[in-house]
Image (cartoon, rainbow, N blue to C red; front, side):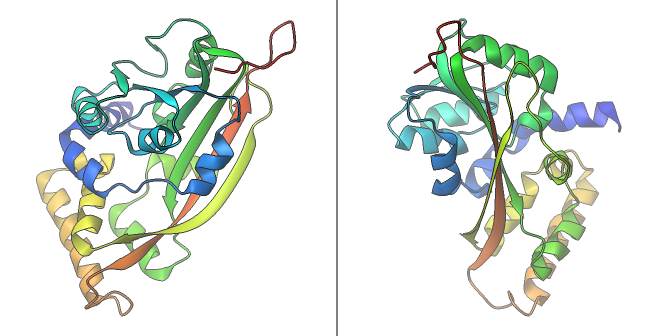
Length: 256
């Protein structure tokens, strides 16, 4: 793996914050329900981006803190969710005190973190018995046109990691898993913006980027299931992973 290229990709999203906010999908209620422990009240959304998953948490009436390293992405989140406390930080360096939250969520971002270091830092800010929950939306390439889209745009680190096994490191306990299928209603401009928001497209050469986006438009125009349609469904499979931090000496879980 080209580490310089990977670092550039990880730090690229602010350059396409508008496309990211406009075109990236939200998350299905089923996975949000699965991720939220009944006792959680204060939640850290880590690597929050423009606030796609943060909105799901706010909608549940939770006290949400968002931590995001990219200034432009964080500013976009703050503009859209002005009541959320938005802080600069990373998975390996979280600007919160010890044992201050009951749940940490990470949507589409765990693969950019050093898992071992992030797990220790997340454990520091979680209350005993608190939960770390990870989630990814991955396009469902069992559908023929979506598979062709994947051939055009390439796969991401998230997609490659999900194809393997996700195990949340110590000091967390057993990793539990969840999957659900759903569809996002989009149009061709949203699909082009979605592709443009991917790190490996953001960091491509201008010529390669233009060629990729043109190929996406051609796919929609030529595919028999999409051609001539103003809107269509992009199918996803959403994957969730969560693990609990062991309780303290009293054995009672945190209620953050």
